[in-house]
Image (cartoon, rainbow, N blue to C red; front, side, top):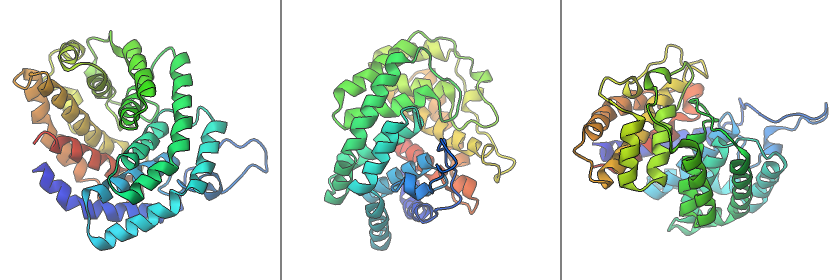
Length: 343
């Protein structure tokens, strides 16, 4: 069923990406001005990533575009996406992006870094020569983010645990997997070591307390998703049962949530929460199955939670409301891909 949904949504999401990459405004710039003259236009600061409302959303729209090219879409959309991505992912544009990251070492940490590395990894491992060329152009950016991640993890004593962009587990998990795909084994181990230091001893996560009014991530499932990546399957199974003891279909951490005002850029985050929970639950379930724990109560609970979470999230993706359309399709494709892997 999920595979069929992906097939149906691929052209729809391609149109979403194209719409986003053509929209320079509104744009939420997070540039810290240092003088009255320091007021550059978004395109000057970010020639690759200056659309889709904000920098990090533009980055993951680029990732979604690359992913859809890999998946396969009709010729007209394929050509349009290639033209749009090829115009932004040039060595010259990316050199400006790399210089900005180097000059602002805490900017977009870790969420933007993570999506940027995911874009780089998806491009680098492609069998498509044009996409691989974009990956090659991203190499200097990968070098810089690798240095930034190494410096940050060396000095950060505590993780950030809330359910928005600065969540440490979500960012580190994506960075770890992307570095592995990129063959950056030392950087991947840096992420894994930080994950073990911050989260390996966690038990009894208070899932009923984690939801707040603008989360698009489950802090608990983000942590479990990360540990499923960095731990051996059997060890993870024991860790997970201690981390979320008594997990049941009625657990708040697995319940779909709704949005009362889709024009509110923070409230609409809850649509993303349904999708990120679906993707994270699917990846945790994959880890449990890899450990031979497919028949456990935890596995059954996670599997039963996937359809309502996915359904609630997918219903919100295709909309004329830009507060949703500038980012949700990326989370939807991630969730669809992760749940399809279970079929």
